[in-house]
Image 1 (cartoon, rainbow, N blue to C red):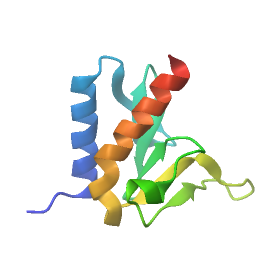
Image 2: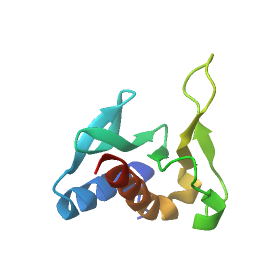
Image 3: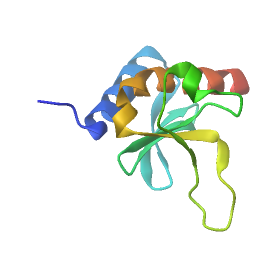
Image 4: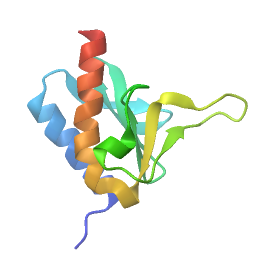
Length: 109
């Protein structure tokens, strides 16, 4: 049986929380998220995963071909440090979660 996008998200949360003491579940925009020291760096939304990796990130360099910036607000521009990656690219989700975690730990210390 194939893993669903939500199953993979839950596996990523489980793996990361076992590996890192400061990582756990959270909420972002009413969706399940992953937090470092209480601050979200990724979340699961509408069968996609959204990662806060930073504006300097190049999805193509990471092998990701389908992506977009997080754009949750009608009257505001997209959030350029957040990348929305569809389920068609879910093979990349574990690596992107690690990258987002690394970016957050660098930012927060």
